[in-house]
Length: 85
Image (cartoon, rainbow, N blue to C red):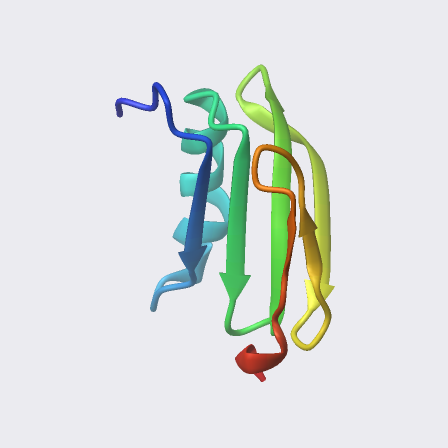
């Protein structure tokens, strides 16, 4: 998958959430995409994966729906999730 120039991927879980949580996450990390944001409808959370290294993301932060999630540079804003409730 061509990933050059992609700074972030944001996805909402599909009917097969395990693909988004595991397979796609690993693919994006292998591609070196700096940030992966996953809106997990089943878990009612938003997770930010960052710092890809050796095919995995080293950092993970999550918030429940209703709380804000700070996105780092180059975005530098808080993702508000209250509307996800």
